[in-house]
Image (cartoon, rainbow, N blue to C red; front, side, top):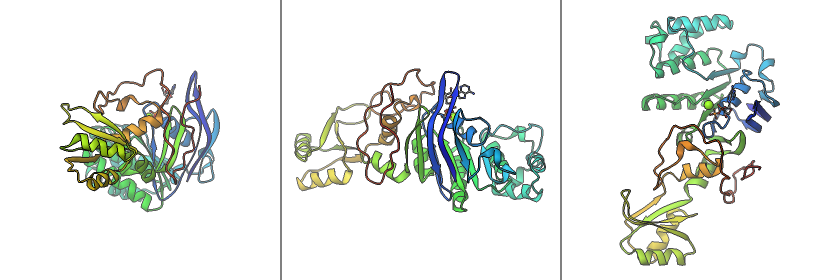
Length: 344
Ligand SMILES: Nc1ncnc2c1ncn2[C@@H]1O[C@H](COP(=O)(O)OP(=O)(O)O)[C@@H](O)[C@H]1O
Ligand SMILES: [Mg+2]
């Protein structure tokens, strides 16, 4: 278990982490979600004792990192996969790590096997692809058989096979009863990886909830619908008390309606009761990302052009964040621990 209470980190004028409190449970994969610059890496460094909190504290089990004896037996982390001596073999790197931390040599072959590097064990680590370097980094993190594992943006730069592999590994580690805490700025990735979420924006907690509750809340929000009788369809939807927007025809597709705060089931049943044919009925793709945007205030990574096709810009976050739009009342069962608007 990881328990953060009032965790705060200031770098000069930047408040990187601001009074952050959350709990990460064992036996689950918990996603640590937030836009770039939200404070995820800083928080992870504080969990690992690599950065000193300005205020507050974080505990692993019941102890602070600095009070752990043999920390590698308690916590393993993948922060920067490229941190290996380039001329050492994978095996030599791990043996050196094991020796430095008084861990048995036989554990090296076990972790090489777990991460699928047995056949590459004698190759120079400096020649490894990013995917192999990630595996080696994870092997190092697993050396002490720790109960708590931290992964900071592990899928960045990986190919689809590597992403799938890491996702499966994290599930397996959680199934073994470990605490798995993985950061990402990609909601779509967390939606399929994590069962719990800690969502932050600008260093503050936005939500601590289950992924299911978060995605239900978000993806049920907007439905796209289209049929051969648009006037009747519009009349039926508005008569049903729904908020409807018209989407004009564009390169992205023919004219349609978007209906807000509704499920596809409800729209389909309304249309069916009126005897209306539908040519399209879909939960709006990207609405998860939109919900995330609304919650976190702003994220350049997801800023769409027009039409809602999010295109990663890769640019740094803007200096000023606009006030986020207010977010509708949470569904029951969702634990929202943060306010919905930023302090002035
Ligand atoms: N060592 C540092 N010195 C100064 N500012 C930092 C340092 N590390 C991070 N920051 C700032 O703290 C904020 C949070 O950064 P970070 O924790 O890396 O966010 P994330 O991992 O969510 O992208 C950013 O504004 C970043 O520029
Ligand atoms: Mg980071």
